Length: 347
Image (tube, rainbow, N blue to C red):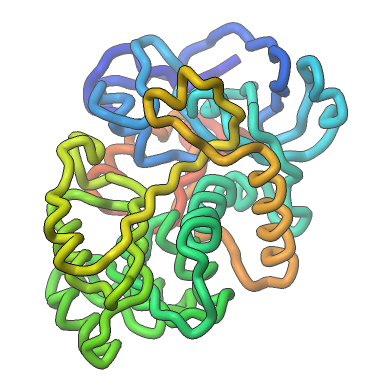
């Protein structure tokens, strides 16, 4: 089968080759999916480069975290999924950008979404739902700042916050990305390239600040985002796409103390972990939470209240160039590899 392989640690254009590899066999708690579409993730860039990411690997390995397709084989305990059209997350966030992929966290695909849109749903909407609802307990009428509003995760967060009755201030770079945020329901789009985010949030909230700050980017602007919170506000540390150390450099706690703000971490993983993993700080949500979150998302999709934003569709041979575009911030929404596309086709 064909798969997108990282053969050396380098920038995506130099790290990736599309190769023929063996079809994997599912173990207990896993299924094998005949992949129709698979999404690209910003973390794939760090994995190519050998930098810091939540999950690292030594070459050679197959990229890809979340997929859509039909289950064709099942390991022990997963037989009920045979033949079903699903979306899911690959073990260790690897292996999805291939014609066949193993999936651990598996869910029914939304019937109203085609394969490309379904593949774009899982990570952005699950992590955003976990952040806004499971962690921040977002309430109707609150104000939410969504940083990286035109990204895949940002577009999901905007829609979920609006669906919950919140008022969204989206932060993005450039007029085109701002227009997308407004189309998705944001009350205000702040152009971070030309505007002060702090002043815009203060203006929009009557000097009060935002109740919730949703940040999938991190990096040097983290402390600026902390200044935008209301008294008792909640800052959601969702990701670190603008931080070469993936958030491991740390931030001074005194500024949080001065701001009277709560920081809430969130990670997308549905696992029962042994005590040894807990010792290293790994404490994910259990699988039952994933099933409950996905049921809520299926309902929102069916009602037409949320939709995945697909900015670009490529074939497997376009993954390296697409990841370079992600690194240069030239993308909006989700980039999805459609396994039905030929080697040169793109849309």
